[in-house]
Image (cartoon, rainbow, N blue to C red; front, top):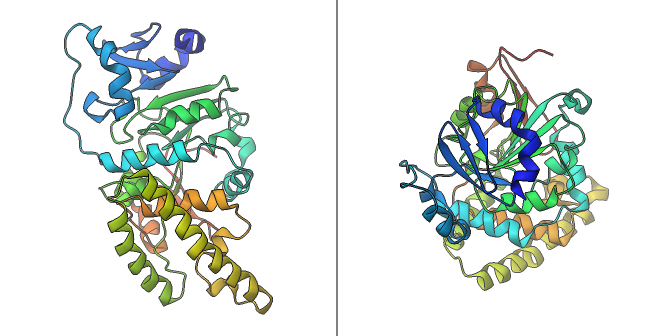
Length: 344
């Protein structure tokens, strides 16, 4: 039951929201009089107009039990992006063996032992594939996602007791400033309407240290990578509008078998000649399972909004943060931002 899971966590919830006026009931959380539904231990922060179909169906009776109409605020969010990520993580819900290596690649700039006493936030958590490897390395873990994937994350972290689950819009979280000691947002901000660089600046208020990954602009690759990207982009914008599940399944398999696997085979053949780095996709996907590749194909082709940023653009964040550290290792260019309140 929801009440049982959060019953001993009210103190942390009060600190996250920055409020002492918090009341927990069986299927709802009241903060300063604002009522948030709670389903399967997930606290729903979204405005009702942002609810995906799954929530609309589940919360219909719940809304009727609330006196008065819920407060609905105008919001600007991409429903199709929410839909795609919800569907993606329902199709690919499992934590895979290769996710551990990817986790270590993303966190190469972080001393994991220093997180022991930190409250860590995974913003745009998806199925919780990175938090899965962090839950025993930090004091508290806050997972936030605006799609149905948050319910998959709850299942994947079912054995944890230091974890908080929120379904919310990262642009309007009702949390206090610096509610977390460390926040990471990997592969999320480049799917928003607004400039992802500006969104990183906005995240400054949430934590003194951020770890971020944005799609890179292929600025360290040969010119033909960018030509191929322009072709892929035109194709992506067409297929991203298709919601038919059979089409998505067939297209995902087609790209995996017809494009990704042949390029990986070519890169492997050229490796003895030290030419494999000239083959698109090889460096990032060598050794990955077919299921992991399929998930990335789905992610890449069925997401309408995709922004890309150069290393130079990331460096420009120094106008906002005290320190910006960029990793030169895969995946390019994940980076750390630290603000004035961060103490090493």
